[in-house]
Image 1 (tube, rainbow, N blue to C red):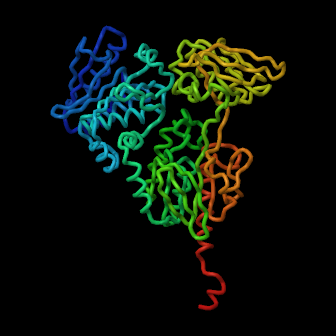
Image 2 (tube, helix red, strand yellow; image 1 turned 90 degrees about the vertical axis):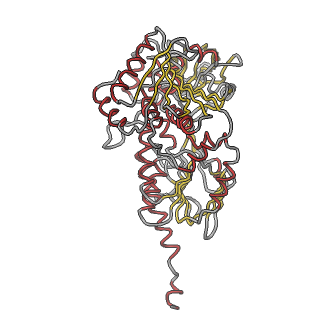
Image 3 (cartoon, rainbow, N blue to C red; image 1 turned 60 degrees about the horizontal axis):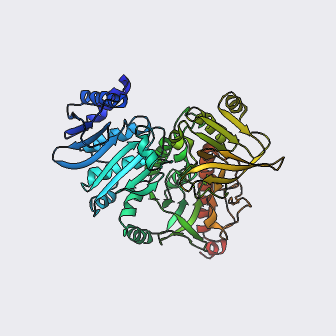
Length: 526
């Protein structure tokens, strides 16, 4: 299962284990079960602290395996084979069950240990989902720290009957004590806050006590990270408030156009951004959603969703953008029930089914190409009379036998049976005729929408909702700057966002110098 290079790396990690790891494997006669046994055998060979016992007909999912340590009440199980994106989850679980301390803030660790209640979490993931590991790793950590938390991470591809019976059409999907708990990326702080109902009030109280900043960055994507780093290097007081550090980069599968880095993946890139920011004296406040900007002469206030208010001499807005929705009847009703926005995450759940991709730009065409290798048929629907994707992608798309392309087509409605998507209605914009297309999945890839609704009336926005900035990143409000995908700067690219974040930060520092300098009359009087 593991190549020699991976075994060598894993052996080095396992040297950090300080207590025995007992693995109980539930097996059957399936091919997947044999593969799982092979993987566990390789783990045993890499560390004398790991032991494996196999059982049959024990009432657990098969193939699956539980991790624990003698003398410790740990309830953590993988159902399936955690390879692909989930291999890191397996490595971290081994280390944490083996006594290696987690790299988590002590306040969060204490909060997990203090949770009162019995919690059985079941997480459905796919091996191609870049969002799933964050959820799996967070719940695994909670299971290691608190004996009343149980977690089973389930590969939906290995247990399709469960996926079908629970009508799971999006990953990660998390159940708590048999009831739907959440879908999509969640970090450990977010999960704990949903269980600990008083955490928001405590967090707000702590944030309200923060001293005023010199520069406050709102948003933790590439633009926000670059702004924080450039400001911190000036030796001034910096804060970053982000709804999720990393931003939309976390939802990006492959990054192949970042200069000097031939290939990386979004979550890995976002993690590197966070590490770099935390190398400096920056007050990072994650899972904080800004709701109101209140300009002032000497101080600017930002009100957060949890009721806290942060204050700063200057503010840099880098709230990024999100996937644009079709805004047609049925889209909201069937979101995560057939309507999806991440083909990499959710594509495997539609294996052998018919799907549509909405959008003929690079993202849409790339999604259609990827999905064509998984599903039975793809229909790409483009509003314009031609595709807008790069020519090389168009040639690849047209070469695929199970892909149809509809041009000058406007999606007008998502159809379903009350539980899941059954089709869509589109209009031929030239002939004016309406058609119904039967299918089971719809992947929306029609561009980005800036996260700026909360700024209406506070700063000047373009008709598209983008923050209007000058060549210094200055907004219509003195002392308030903006950078990245939420602004009018063209070409929404990571490398451009980084540069714009750095520029806005330098402009904010220049503003601080100019506004803090004594005026000419005061100098003469002195």
